[in-house]
Length: 262
Image 1 (cartoon, rainbow, N blue to C red):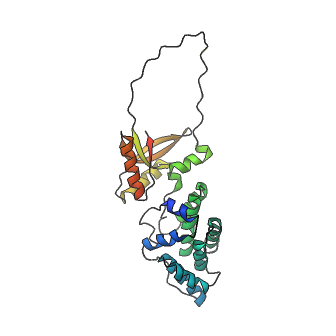
Image 2 (image 1 turned 135 degrees about the vertical axis):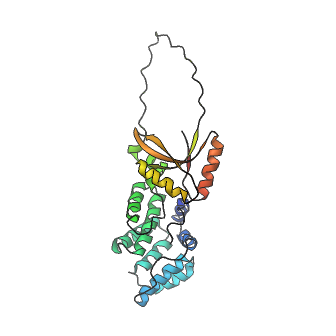
Image 3 (image 1 turned 30 degrees about the horizontal axis):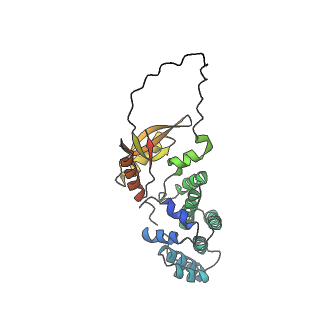
């Protein structure tokens, strides 16, 4: 698949975990022609590859027919069985086997992409990040964004949780309460956040990546749990509704976006 054409819509994969992975075949059809080598080898190996190509084209019944004559040990056949299984855990284990036994091959990359999607969809962000690191070793760029760049993944990991604020000691009853002076009301600014990174360089690199999609990004510092990270925003608004509209527009283009206060 052409990995550089678009970001991946994680939500669609989440739905696929609940039933046969038909969404997988639908994604293949929209990603262009296969980048894998033409079918070679024994007849059973070839049928495994033909089953894989049929799956990429969205021809599920044809994929099943080729699968019947394929070598069960063929990584292509195993990939198709994983994509068509109803159980996400079983599929993930099959993808892991493909990656482990076919290191560096195109089919291993395809399996690693699906393994990333499974880990992300099930909230296993650290495992998804490891998959992403492995994907970066291939010649083609990963067709997914690093989960470390997503606010929900950072906030789901305990060490990134904001520390509890220390409450000031209670004022003794006999001490007169100080006269409060109303502070000037500062207008709330809303940012459309599309990523959070551990280093400024990674954030700047992501800003460059966004330009491919016609999106202008801006790096800003972000404190999480007493540690400084670097966020990337794709718009600043004084109106929360306008910010949310912008975020929804980006999501419709498969770019992760959330609204946060500055």
